[in-house]
Image (tube, rainbow, N blue to C red):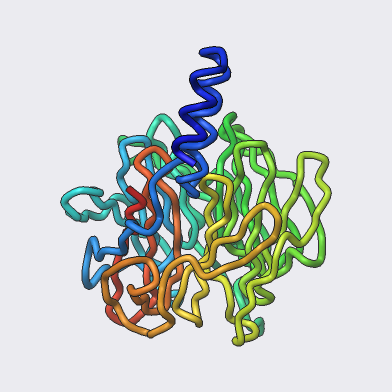
Length: 315
């Protein structure tokens, strides 16, 4: 193969040679032209991590983690990606779930889940916007059990919902609309965009990864092949042409291609917190997940009794 490539390079134009080099190089690097996955490693960034739910990353690589804690959590934590130093960045919350940070450093978090007497679950929640100076405002109040949140390039927020069959859209001015509604979205938690404007939602209960294209057409991209019903996907994230999903009760991380192929990406299935290569490492109830695309890392929060913040280093 090497000799054949050298022969082609000698007898082609510089432009074609450059294309050939790029093509050959990318074939060696399955993570979208990035690192060789056989060398990727899972490490524990923070032990005894007191945040079990949604994760996000800001432009500097800091990790933000919501502490849902089975309806008992009150904070969002901020963690340095290199030292693991962790501090409370938002407090006084009520069972926060998803969070996301915009380019200006404003934190959006799904908060203040409320119950109505006689109901079996949450009936509404606020989407809170917290500025870098600590001031906060209720951007919107949504029905049901809002969960995951993601922003588009215009800072419109999109919120999945565990007990409403759709996704809500919230403008920066706080205007609320139903972005898309489909019964298959009932049970949605994880939510993220790809680089083409397609929106993906992971269904906690069914294990479906649903794709919503820019024409608002909904299709099931894949269903995780897990054996536990009703307790399947924690959160999802998109990176380098794939959707990554935490299989919360299987203790592994799945990777779903845009062709709908779902394979175990990391974790040996053992309910434990052990570092190592992708398929040697173990996770204990993985839940939140987010991608730092610039630094080629995935972060995972664990919903175990003694939580942990894990990092999957892809380079």
